[in-house]
Image 1 (cartoon, rainbow, N blue to C red):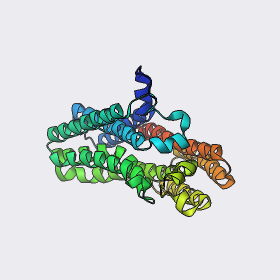
Image 2: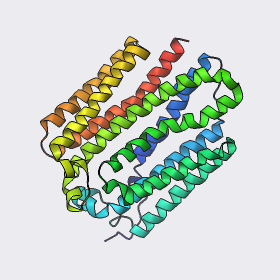
Image 3: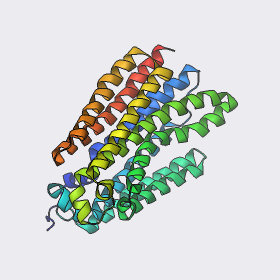
Image 4: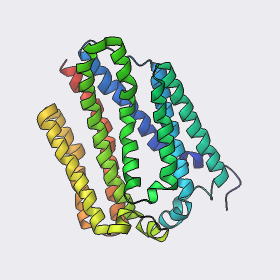
Length: 320
């Protein structure tokens, strides 16, 4: 039974407002702490106007909010099994109202994305916002029940968040600076793709761990997740393998690209130690609480990835 009094807090919980802040921060930091200082090293400036940048950030946030709502809308029955204390749609917000909020957020995000694309003179970029919004809908209705496909889609969309800013910046740089922008664009690609790959692999590992947490409800409602199809042990080792790959790539990044001791200390304290703790929890296994701790640790490492953008900004400016 839905409570008659609407609470704004329920809507904020439904759209996962802390996650939306992280989405916005990711794009702000990638533009301010990575793209801008790297361009200024070669006496160039970002060419994306601030108004377009804000529209892209808001479009990403609104479409993400719509995605969270539609995901919860179609997961109501499963969530009553997996997370009985956290079901919002059907208890605090009417399902029809939730669907209306989904359309409001998603359409607002698409409109902002189209306007940003028009103002940057690259209308084809607007297709990204239609594609992402559509993927979030079909993920919630269909793909998340398909074996592994749903996990990969979520991880790819997460990786797309920082990369989207560079997608808007690159054609504007090429238009302003011509062929002289090519070398710096390559450097920007290395940095931004690095952050996107980090986000993709860790999010994919976390999605598998969350599927272990949600095994009971997923099994009851016929979802074909890795734990349901291959068992918990296999799912645990897939997550461990993905984490090991992240650790290997961090090592390669430090040895061949960054190679400074500030980065080394940051990597060890903020990435390596928490990820090794996560691996320990996954090997140990146990009840749902253990896997929830592992999931939170992976999320913490993803947050500290944002912190490294600030560290990188200091390093880039220091070695001007």
